[in-house]
Length: 276
Image (tube, rainbow, N blue to C red):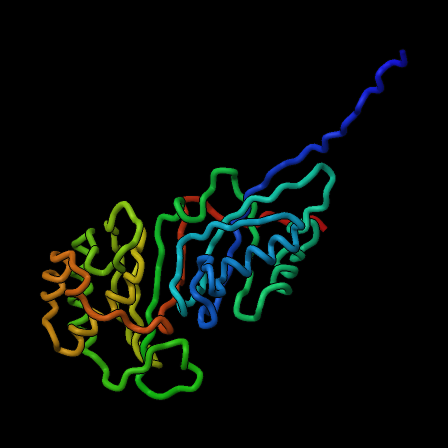
């Protein structure tokens, strides 16, 4: 009887690396960040581009979700990638190759800024400690602001709107500004900045909080506009918030003027030097 042949299998060592990816996008053509069944989203296109350049299935997790038509000047997502021992890392092997390769695969309105290796437990959504948004409004017809700012005919009272905005920071339950039927455990948010600022083009609302509810910023802006137009006094914001009823708040303003502008983390996100 011949001795049984030994079956030798070589297992290549595989390591997994988590990355944060920093990007910006013009949201006009997209149904928000999150993947949708019958609509194009930013996350869908990013997943496809990453899967192509890394030659493996990649699924990203975003720092939040932006609604249809909302823009992001700064947005973070994380993903995991696996590499066999000795394999060339397409994201880090050549300076800017990862960023340049991804940008070549993505449409003009999605721009990759950085690809940053992070520790295995880093989470783009749950680790974020603060997020900042801006809402832009202009008053004169401007061909270059169309789709990027909300045009109004009459300028509202900025002083009254800022009085109401300051009062909002005394509360944490913002159920009145949340889109209905959202699957969240709490409607509590800690707002640390809420301020209207006059600019050369018009006015901009700045708001920062630890987290935001769906449609929250656009509902807040719509409610503050009621104050600015003299439809209710600044103190009326208290009654609306304390009611916890979305129907008492103002109408959501158009998405075109809304931008996610900054996301903060408790650790520094520094791209490590790339090897030539």
